[in-house]
Image (cartoon, rainbow, N blue to C red):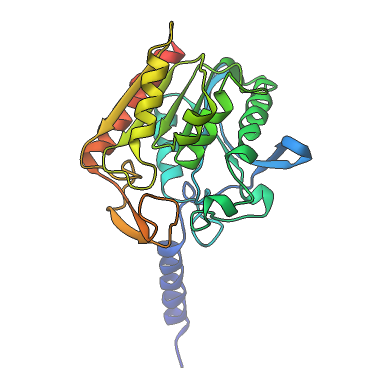
Length: 286
């Protein structure tokens, strides 16, 4: 029979083990808020204001890619989002993360062919407008210093929402930064932009190939008064700002190879792209 002291030691060991495997507070998604979304949807958002902020805060609204906000457990944030929350908080920006997928009863859509998706860029573009409106209603937000940030499908959503050749379109933001969007549809539709844009692409991207975005950036740069910064990182695939090593991902049908795509980080490109993002936000928020 175990002594009482032995039982206590075992219990303490079990607690330490549990603490080691549980996600940290930064990694675990807090209970989301619900705000008024398009077509009567209750849009779930994760609001991460600055602690001990004095006065209204500048805010970055960040839009997730086709995998959504969470890991496969549906509870824990993908590592990208805690990383960026920390990065942005350290630079004095609050963060809002809209959840376009859970709000509509969906998880990842990465392995669904684009033509078969029930949630697409058209669905999400008004989430951008709803998120901006919610922030502008809050007294602790600096309504003149709101920026948009997006990755992949979220980047396409941001670009679509800002297209001045369509109504409604997003208004009242200081600028937008996008990582590896797909730009083919925007080229076909026609595109106008009235805010500063930072576009960052991977030269080897075989999921959302960089060439259409290069053409779109060239078109925008040729417009009077445009403010477009394009950065293309060599030896870099889709997701180059990730900490996860690059790999071939099978079962993704929407890239240049129908069998799958390469995705993952490039340490040098990650560091340089974050520095570029930092410079861009400082400039548009000054």
